[in-house]
Length: 458
Picture (tube, rainbow, N blue to C red):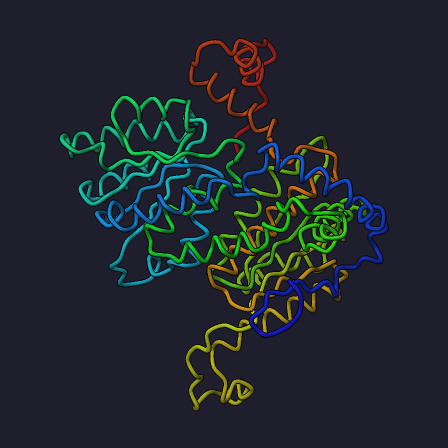
Protein backbone atom coordinates (compact mmCIF):
# COMPACT_ATOMS: atom_id res chain seq x y z
CA UNK A 1 0.00 0.00 0.00
CA UNK A 2 2.10 2.86 -1.28
CA UNK A 3 1.28 6.24 -2.70
CA UNK A 4 0.41 6.46 -6.35
CA UNK A 5 -2.72 6.89 -8.41
CA UNK A 6 -6.00 8.04 -6.89
CA UNK A 7 -7.31 4.47 -6.89
CA UNK A 8 -4.47 3.01 -4.84
CA UNK A 9 -4.84 2.20 -1.18
CA UNK A 10 -2.35 4.16 0.92
CA UNK A 11 -0.98 3.91 4.44
CA UNK A 12 0.05 7.41 5.45
CA UNK A 13 2.69 7.29 8.20
CA UNK A 14 3.31 11.05 8.25
CA UNK A 15 1.88 11.49 11.75
CA UNK A 16 2.80 8.09 13.24
CA UNK A 17 5.08 9.84 15.80
CA UNK A 18 7.98 7.41 15.41
CA UNK A 19 10.21 9.86 17.28
CA UNK A 20 8.19 9.05 20.43
CA UNK A 21 8.45 5.29 19.91
CA UNK A 22 12.11 4.39 20.57
CA UNK A 23 11.55 0.63 20.75
CA UNK A 24 10.55 0.63 17.06
CA UNK A 25 14.24 0.47 16.09
CA UNK A 26 14.79 -2.81 17.95
CA UNK A 27 11.44 -4.21 16.81
CA UNK A 28 12.25 -3.63 13.13
CA UNK A 29 15.41 -5.67 13.69
CA UNK A 30 13.27 -8.72 14.40
CA UNK A 31 12.04 -9.06 10.80
CA UNK A 32 14.28 -12.07 10.11
CA UNK A 33 13.02 -13.88 13.20
CA UNK A 34 9.40 -13.16 12.27
CA UNK A 35 9.90 -14.27 8.65
CA UNK A 36 11.29 -17.62 9.78
CA UNK A 37 8.41 -18.11 12.18
CA UNK A 38 5.83 -17.24 9.54
CA UNK A 39 7.30 -19.74 7.11
CA UNK A 40 7.37 -22.48 9.73
CA UNK A 41 3.83 -21.99 10.98
CA UNK A 42 2.39 -21.69 7.49
CA UNK A 43 4.14 -24.88 6.43
CA UNK A 44 2.74 -26.59 9.53
CA UNK A 45 -0.80 -25.52 8.59
CA UNK A 46 -1.18 -23.26 11.63
CA UNK A 47 -2.07 -20.06 9.76
CA UNK A 48 -4.80 -20.94 7.25
CA UNK A 49 -6.21 -17.41 7.36
CA UNK A 50 -3.05 -16.18 5.61
CA UNK A 51 -2.33 -19.12 3.32
CA UNK A 52 -6.04 -19.80 2.56
CA UNK A 53 -5.46 -23.43 1.48
CA UNK A 54 -9.21 -23.99 1.74
CA UNK A 55 -10.13 -21.29 -0.76
CA UNK A 56 -10.25 -23.27 -4.02
CA UNK A 57 -12.74 -25.78 -2.60
CA UNK A 58 -14.74 -23.02 -0.90
CA UNK A 59 -15.00 -20.97 -4.09
CA UNK A 60 -16.45 -24.00 -5.85
CA UNK A 61 -18.92 -24.61 -3.01
CA UNK A 62 -19.98 -20.96 -2.99
CA UNK A 63 -20.49 -20.89 -6.75
CA UNK A 64 -22.75 -23.91 -6.52
CA UNK A 65 -24.66 -22.50 -3.55
CA UNK A 66 -25.34 -19.12 -5.16
CA UNK A 67 -26.44 -20.71 -8.44
CA UNK A 68 -29.10 -22.86 -6.80
CA UNK A 69 -29.56 -23.42 -3.09
CA UNK A 70 -29.28 -19.81 -1.86
CA UNK A 71 -31.71 -18.55 -4.50
CA UNK A 72 -34.55 -20.38 -2.76
CA UNK A 73 -34.56 -18.07 0.24
CA UNK A 74 -35.42 -14.43 0.92
CA UNK A 75 -34.08 -14.34 4.47
CA UNK A 76 -30.98 -15.69 6.16
CA UNK A 77 -31.03 -16.03 9.94
CA UNK A 78 -27.43 -16.31 11.10
CA UNK A 79 -26.85 -17.91 14.51
CA UNK A 80 -23.33 -17.12 15.71
CA UNK A 81 -21.44 -14.99 18.19
CA UNK A 82 -18.18 -13.06 18.22
CA UNK A 83 -16.08 -13.83 15.17
CA UNK A 84 -18.88 -16.00 13.82
CA UNK A 85 -21.00 -12.89 13.30
CA UNK A 86 -18.91 -9.69 13.31
CA UNK A 87 -17.39 -10.19 9.85
CA UNK A 88 -20.75 -11.00 8.28
CA UNK A 89 -22.32 -7.93 9.86
CA UNK A 90 -19.50 -5.67 8.66
CA UNK A 91 -19.85 -6.97 5.11
CA UNK A 92 -23.64 -6.60 5.13
CA UNK A 93 -23.52 -3.05 6.43
CA UNK A 94 -20.81 -2.06 3.93
CA UNK A 95 -21.99 -3.80 0.78
CA UNK A 96 -25.70 -4.60 1.20
CA UNK A 97 -26.86 -1.50 3.10
CA UNK A 98 -30.27 -1.33 1.40
CA UNK A 99 -31.62 -3.69 4.09
CA UNK A 100 -31.34 -0.79 6.54
CA UNK A 101 -33.04 1.74 4.26
CA UNK A 102 -36.74 2.50 3.67
CA UNK A 103 -38.58 0.40 1.12
CA UNK A 104 -36.15 -2.55 1.06
CA UNK A 105 -37.50 -5.44 -1.00
CA UNK A 106 -34.47 -7.68 -1.59
CA UNK A 107 -32.81 -10.39 0.44
CA UNK A 108 -32.24 -9.79 4.16
CA UNK A 109 -29.66 -11.03 6.63
CA UNK A 110 -30.66 -11.24 10.28
CA UNK A 111 -27.88 -11.90 12.79
CA UNK A 112 -28.59 -13.40 16.21
CA UNK A 113 -25.32 -12.83 18.04
CA UNK A 114 -26.67 -12.50 21.55
CA UNK A 115 -28.95 -14.36 23.93
CA UNK A 116 -31.81 -11.88 24.00
CA UNK A 117 -34.95 -13.96 24.45
CA UNK A 118 -37.28 -11.18 23.29
CA UNK A 119 -35.34 -10.51 20.09
CA UNK A 120 -35.18 -14.20 19.18
CA UNK A 121 -38.91 -14.51 19.76
CA UNK A 122 -39.57 -11.47 17.58
CA UNK A 123 -37.57 -12.97 14.72
CA UNK A 124 -39.38 -16.30 14.95
CA UNK A 125 -42.75 -14.57 15.11
CA UNK A 126 -42.11 -12.46 12.02
CA UNK A 127 -39.86 -14.44 9.69
CA UNK A 128 -41.60 -16.68 7.11
CA UNK A 129 -40.11 -20.11 7.78
CA UNK A 130 -40.68 -21.29 4.22
CA UNK A 131 -38.52 -18.44 2.86
CA UNK A 132 -35.82 -18.50 5.54
CA UNK A 133 -32.41 -20.19 5.60
CA UNK A 134 -30.91 -20.67 9.06
CA UNK A 135 -27.11 -20.48 8.94
CA UNK A 136 -25.52 -21.84 12.12
CA UNK A 137 -21.86 -20.98 12.70
CA UNK A 138 -19.84 -22.66 15.45
CA UNK A 139 -16.41 -24.18 14.94
CA UNK A 140 -16.62 -26.27 18.12
CA UNK A 141 -20.27 -27.12 17.60
CA UNK A 142 -21.05 -26.52 21.27
CA UNK A 143 -20.97 -22.74 21.74
CA UNK A 144 -23.76 -22.47 24.30
CA UNK A 145 -25.20 -19.16 23.06
CA UNK A 146 -25.40 -20.41 19.47
CA UNK A 147 -26.50 -23.97 20.25
CA UNK A 148 -29.16 -22.69 22.65
CA UNK A 149 -30.62 -20.66 19.79
CA UNK A 150 -30.23 -23.61 17.42
CA UNK A 151 -32.40 -25.85 19.59
CA UNK A 152 -35.23 -23.31 19.52
CA UNK A 153 -34.92 -22.39 15.85
CA UNK A 154 -34.71 -26.04 14.85
CA UNK A 155 -37.99 -26.68 16.69
CA UNK A 156 -39.52 -23.61 14.99
CA UNK A 157 -38.59 -25.04 11.60
CA UNK A 158 -39.91 -28.49 12.49
CA UNK A 159 -43.24 -27.06 13.61
CA UNK A 160 -43.62 -24.89 10.50
CA UNK A 161 -42.09 -27.25 7.91
CA UNK A 162 -42.35 -30.81 9.24
CA UNK A 163 -41.45 -32.38 5.92
CA UNK A 164 -38.59 -30.11 4.86
CA UNK A 165 -37.17 -28.41 7.98
CA UNK A 166 -33.66 -29.78 7.51
CA UNK A 167 -33.50 -28.26 4.02
CA UNK A 168 -33.68 -24.82 5.63
CA UNK A 169 -30.50 -25.33 7.65
CA UNK A 170 -26.87 -24.83 6.72
CA UNK A 171 -24.25 -25.67 9.36
CA UNK A 172 -20.73 -24.23 9.37
CA UNK A 173 -18.70 -26.26 11.85
CA UNK A 174 -15.73 -28.56 12.39
CA UNK A 175 -15.30 -31.07 9.59
CA UNK A 176 -15.05 -34.12 11.85
CA UNK A 177 -16.24 -33.48 15.41
CA UNK A 178 -18.62 -31.54 17.62
CA UNK A 179 -22.35 -31.52 18.31
CA UNK A 180 -23.32 -29.83 15.05
CA UNK A 181 -21.29 -32.34 13.05
CA UNK A 182 -23.30 -35.08 14.77
CA UNK A 183 -26.54 -33.28 13.91
CA UNK A 184 -25.52 -33.08 10.27
CA UNK A 185 -24.71 -36.79 10.17
CA UNK A 186 -27.93 -37.82 11.91
CA UNK A 187 -30.36 -35.72 9.89
CA UNK A 188 -28.52 -35.20 6.60
CA UNK A 189 -28.22 -31.42 7.06
CA UNK A 190 -26.11 -29.51 4.54
CA UNK A 191 -22.75 -28.36 5.95
CA UNK A 192 -19.61 -26.39 5.19
CA UNK A 193 -16.39 -27.02 7.14
CA UNK A 194 -14.47 -24.57 9.31
CA UNK A 195 -10.80 -25.30 8.52
CA UNK A 196 -8.54 -26.50 11.32
CA UNK A 197 -6.57 -23.77 13.11
CA UNK A 198 -8.93 -21.05 11.85
CA UNK A 199 -10.10 -19.06 14.89
CA UNK A 200 -13.36 -17.16 14.75
CA UNK A 201 -11.88 -13.66 14.71
CA UNK A 202 -9.66 -14.61 11.75
CA UNK A 203 -12.43 -16.42 9.86
CA UNK A 204 -14.41 -13.71 8.05
CA UNK A 205 -12.70 -14.57 4.75
CA UNK A 206 -13.86 -18.21 5.06
CA UNK A 207 -17.39 -19.59 4.69
CA UNK A 208 -18.21 -17.80 7.95
CA UNK A 209 -18.39 -14.44 6.18
CA UNK A 210 -18.51 -15.43 2.53
CA UNK A 211 -21.74 -17.45 2.66
CA UNK A 212 -23.76 -14.44 3.88
CA UNK A 213 -21.92 -12.33 1.32
CA UNK A 214 -22.91 -14.70 -1.49
CA UNK A 215 -26.49 -14.86 -0.21
CA UNK A 216 -26.78 -11.06 -0.33
CA UNK A 217 -25.26 -10.87 -3.82
CA UNK A 218 -22.00 -9.19 -2.84
CA UNK A 219 -18.88 -9.42 -4.97
CA UNK A 220 -17.27 -11.96 -2.65
CA UNK A 221 -14.75 -12.95 -5.33
CA UNK A 222 -13.33 -9.40 -5.30
CA UNK A 223 -13.18 -9.57 -1.49
CA UNK A 224 -11.11 -12.75 -1.75
CA UNK A 225 -8.85 -11.24 -4.44
CA UNK A 226 -8.14 -8.23 -2.27
CA UNK A 227 -7.43 -10.36 0.78
CA UNK A 228 -5.06 -12.66 -1.05
CA UNK A 229 -3.27 -9.72 -2.67
CA UNK A 230 -2.08 -8.62 0.77
CA UNK A 231 -1.84 -12.03 2.49
CA UNK A 232 -0.14 -14.04 -0.26
CA UNK A 233 3.31 -12.39 0.07
CA UNK A 234 3.34 -13.36 3.75
CA UNK A 235 2.58 -16.97 2.88
CA UNK A 236 5.18 -17.09 0.09
CA UNK A 237 7.94 -19.66 0.80
CA UNK A 238 10.41 -17.07 -0.46
CA UNK A 239 9.58 -14.59 2.29
CA UNK A 240 12.72 -13.21 3.93
CA UNK A 241 13.58 -10.42 6.34
CA UNK A 242 13.73 -7.76 3.64
CA UNK A 243 10.38 -8.67 2.12
CA UNK A 244 8.68 -8.87 5.51
CA UNK A 245 10.17 -5.56 6.63
CA UNK A 246 8.72 -3.96 3.50
CA UNK A 247 5.24 -5.39 4.10
CA UNK A 248 2.74 -2.92 5.61
CA UNK A 249 1.46 -5.53 8.08
CA UNK A 250 4.90 -5.78 9.70
CA UNK A 251 5.30 -2.00 9.81
CA UNK A 252 1.88 -1.75 11.50
CA UNK A 253 2.87 -4.47 13.98
CA UNK A 254 6.08 -2.60 14.86
CA UNK A 255 4.03 0.56 15.36
CA UNK A 256 1.44 -1.27 17.49
CA UNK A 257 4.01 -2.86 19.80
CA UNK A 258 6.13 0.32 20.04
CA UNK A 259 3.02 2.25 21.04
CA UNK A 260 2.42 -0.15 23.92
CA UNK A 261 6.05 0.13 24.99
CA UNK A 262 5.67 3.92 25.11
CA UNK A 263 2.52 3.78 27.24
CA UNK A 264 -0.11 4.25 24.55
CA UNK A 265 -2.62 1.74 25.87
CA UNK A 266 -5.66 2.69 23.76
CA UNK A 267 -6.03 2.43 19.98
CA UNK A 268 -8.81 4.48 18.41
CA UNK A 269 -10.14 3.11 15.12
CA UNK A 270 -11.79 6.12 13.49
CA UNK A 271 -13.72 5.03 10.38
CA UNK A 272 -14.73 7.98 8.22
CA UNK A 273 -16.61 5.68 5.86
CA UNK A 274 -20.02 5.53 7.57
CA UNK A 275 -21.15 2.28 5.93
CA UNK A 276 -17.91 0.65 7.10
CA UNK A 277 -18.50 1.49 10.77
CA UNK A 278 -19.05 -2.18 11.67
CA UNK A 279 -15.52 -2.97 10.49
CA UNK A 280 -14.40 -1.03 13.57
CA UNK A 281 -16.30 -3.53 15.73
CA UNK A 282 -14.81 -6.42 13.75
CA UNK A 283 -11.31 -5.05 14.32
CA UNK A 284 -12.01 -4.40 18.02
CA UNK A 285 -12.56 -8.11 18.63
CA UNK A 286 -9.58 -9.05 16.48
CA UNK A 287 -7.18 -6.75 18.34
CA UNK A 288 -8.56 -7.14 21.87
CA UNK A 289 -9.06 -10.89 21.94
CA UNK A 290 -5.73 -11.54 20.22
CA UNK A 291 -3.52 -9.18 22.22
CA UNK A 292 -5.08 -8.77 25.65
CA UNK A 293 -2.78 -11.29 27.38
CA UNK A 294 -0.58 -11.44 30.47
CA UNK A 295 -1.35 -7.87 31.52
CA UNK A 296 -0.38 -6.51 28.11
CA UNK A 297 -2.14 -5.11 25.06
CA UNK A 298 -3.94 -1.95 24.04
CA UNK A 299 -7.67 -1.34 24.18
CA UNK A 300 -9.32 -0.80 20.76
CA UNK A 301 -11.95 1.95 20.69
CA UNK A 302 -14.33 1.56 17.70
CA UNK A 303 -15.36 4.99 16.42
CA UNK A 304 -17.17 6.34 13.36
CA UNK A 305 -16.97 9.78 11.78
CA UNK A 306 -18.55 12.19 11.74
CA UNK A 307 -20.91 10.87 14.46
CA UNK A 308 -18.30 10.41 17.18
CA UNK A 309 -16.81 13.86 16.69
CA UNK A 310 -19.87 14.91 18.68
CA UNK A 311 -19.61 12.24 21.37
CA UNK A 312 -16.23 10.83 22.42
CA UNK A 313 -13.78 12.95 20.43
CA UNK A 314 -13.43 15.46 23.30
CA UNK A 315 -11.75 12.69 25.32
CA UNK A 316 -9.47 11.81 22.43
CA UNK A 317 -8.37 15.41 21.96
CA UNK A 318 -8.14 16.65 25.54
CA UNK A 319 -8.09 13.57 27.76
CA UNK A 320 -5.18 11.39 28.91
CA UNK A 321 -2.32 11.21 26.40
CA UNK A 322 -2.48 7.43 26.20
CA UNK A 323 -4.19 7.08 22.82
CA UNK A 324 -3.11 6.39 19.26
CA UNK A 325 -5.35 6.28 16.21
CA UNK A 326 -5.89 4.19 13.09
CA UNK A 327 -7.79 6.60 10.83
CA UNK A 328 -9.65 5.03 7.89
CA UNK A 329 -11.00 7.17 5.06
CA UNK A 330 -11.63 7.02 1.33
CA UNK A 331 -10.09 9.09 -1.42
CA UNK A 332 -13.53 10.14 -2.62
CA UNK A 333 -17.17 9.40 -1.88
CA UNK A 334 -20.60 10.13 -3.35
CA UNK A 335 -21.22 13.76 -4.27
CA UNK A 336 -24.68 13.91 -2.71
CA UNK A 337 -27.40 16.46 -3.29
CA UNK A 338 -26.52 20.09 -4.10
CA UNK A 339 -27.24 22.64 -1.40
CA UNK A 340 -30.13 24.95 -2.31
CA UNK A 341 -29.42 28.47 -3.51
CA UNK A 342 -31.60 30.26 -0.93
CA UNK A 343 -29.69 29.46 2.26
CA UNK A 344 -29.09 32.02 5.05
CA UNK A 345 -26.06 34.26 4.63
CA UNK A 346 -24.23 32.67 7.56
CA UNK A 347 -24.03 29.46 5.52
CA UNK A 348 -22.91 31.08 2.27
CA UNK A 349 -19.70 29.04 2.34
CA UNK A 350 -21.86 26.06 1.29
CA UNK A 351 -23.12 27.80 -1.83
CA UNK A 352 -22.32 25.83 -4.97
CA UNK A 353 -21.28 22.76 -3.00
CA UNK A 354 -22.86 19.36 -2.47
CA UNK A 355 -23.73 17.49 0.71
CA UNK A 356 -20.99 14.95 -0.04
CA UNK A 357 -18.35 17.62 0.60
CA UNK A 358 -19.10 17.65 4.34
CA UNK A 359 -17.69 14.23 5.28
CA UNK A 360 -14.19 14.66 3.78
CA UNK A 361 -14.01 18.13 5.32
CA UNK A 362 -14.98 16.68 8.70
CA UNK A 363 -12.43 13.88 8.23
CA UNK A 364 -9.61 16.30 7.48
CA UNK A 365 -10.56 18.50 10.41
CA UNK A 366 -10.71 15.59 12.83
CA UNK A 367 -7.48 14.04 11.60
CA UNK A 368 -5.64 17.35 11.85
CA UNK A 369 -7.04 18.04 15.33
CA UNK A 370 -5.92 14.61 16.56
CA UNK A 371 -2.43 15.17 15.20
CA UNK A 372 -2.21 18.65 16.73
CA UNK A 373 -3.27 17.06 20.04
CA UNK A 374 -0.21 14.79 19.81
CA UNK A 375 -2.18 11.60 19.10
CA UNK A 376 0.07 9.22 17.08
CA UNK A 377 -1.95 8.54 13.94
CA UNK A 378 -1.70 6.30 10.89
CA UNK A 379 -4.15 6.99 8.08
CA UNK A 380 -5.41 4.19 5.85
CA UNK A 381 -6.76 5.92 2.76
CA UNK A 382 -8.69 3.74 0.33
CA UNK A 383 -8.72 4.51 -3.35
CA UNK A 384 -12.14 2.87 -3.58
CA UNK A 385 -14.44 1.65 -0.83
CA UNK A 386 -15.27 -1.56 -2.69
CA UNK A 387 -15.08 -5.24 -1.80
CA UNK A 388 -11.53 -5.65 -3.05
CA UNK A 389 -10.35 -2.78 -0.86
CA UNK A 390 -12.17 -4.31 2.10
CA UNK A 391 -10.41 -7.62 1.51
CA UNK A 392 -7.04 -5.86 1.45
CA UNK A 393 -7.81 -4.04 4.68
CA UNK A 394 -8.96 -7.21 6.43
CA UNK A 395 -5.79 -9.05 5.44
CA UNK A 396 -3.61 -6.13 6.51
CA UNK A 397 -5.21 -5.82 9.94
CA UNK A 398 -5.38 -9.57 10.51
CA UNK A 399 -1.72 -10.11 9.66
CA UNK A 400 -0.68 -7.02 11.63
CA UNK A 401 -2.52 -8.30 14.70
CA UNK A 402 -0.82 -11.68 14.47
CA UNK A 403 2.64 -10.13 14.08
CA UNK A 404 2.01 -7.67 16.91
CA UNK A 405 1.24 -10.60 19.18
CA UNK A 406 4.47 -12.33 18.23
CA UNK A 407 6.45 -9.15 18.88
CA UNK A 408 4.77 -9.01 22.30
CA UNK A 409 5.77 -12.60 23.05
CA UNK A 410 2.19 -13.85 23.45
CA UNK A 411 -0.05 -16.25 21.51
CA UNK A 412 -2.37 -14.08 19.37
CA UNK A 413 -4.63 -16.96 18.30
CA UNK A 414 -5.96 -18.13 21.66
CA UNK A 415 -8.26 -16.50 24.24
CA UNK A 416 -7.74 -18.28 27.58
CA UNK A 417 -9.36 -15.67 29.82
CA UNK A 418 -12.60 -15.77 27.80
CA UNK A 419 -12.97 -19.47 28.50
CA UNK A 420 -13.35 -18.87 32.26
CA UNK A 421 -16.53 -16.89 31.79
CA UNK A 422 -17.92 -19.61 29.54
CA UNK A 423 -17.23 -22.32 32.16
CA UNK A 424 -18.80 -20.22 34.91
CA UNK A 425 -21.92 -19.65 32.80
CA UNK A 426 -22.27 -23.39 32.20
CA UNK A 427 -21.78 -24.02 35.93
CA UNK A 428 -24.54 -21.49 36.72
CA UNK A 429 -26.87 -23.35 34.35
CA UNK A 430 -26.14 -26.67 36.10
CA UNK A 431 -23.77 -28.40 33.68
CA UNK A 432 -22.23 -31.58 35.07
CA UNK A 433 -18.76 -31.42 36.59
CA UNK A 434 -17.21 -27.96 36.96
CA UNK A 435 -17.01 -28.38 40.74
CA UNK A 436 -14.39 -25.66 41.11
CA UNK A 437 -16.41 -23.19 39.07
CA UNK A 438 -19.58 -23.97 41.10
CA UNK A 439 -17.75 -23.38 44.36
CA UNK A 440 -16.38 -20.11 43.03
CA UNK A 441 -19.87 -19.03 41.95
CA UNK A 442 -21.28 -19.76 45.39
CA UNK A 443 -18.58 -17.64 47.03
CA UNK A 444 -18.98 -14.80 44.52
CA UNK A 445 -22.76 -14.60 44.89
CA UNK A 446 -22.57 -14.78 48.70
CA UNK A 447 -24.33 -18.11 48.87
CA UNK A 448 -21.31 -19.89 50.29
CA UNK A 449 -20.33 -17.35 52.94
CA UNK A 450 -21.74 -15.95 56.19
CA UNK A 451 -20.67 -12.40 55.47
CA UNK A 452 -23.51 -11.66 53.06
CA UNK A 453 -23.45 -9.12 50.26
CA UNK A 454 -23.10 -5.35 50.24
CA UNK A 455 -26.12 -4.34 48.15
CA UNK A 456 -27.74 -0.92 48.50
CA UNK A 457 -30.78 0.62 46.88
CA UNK A 458 -30.54 3.91 45.03
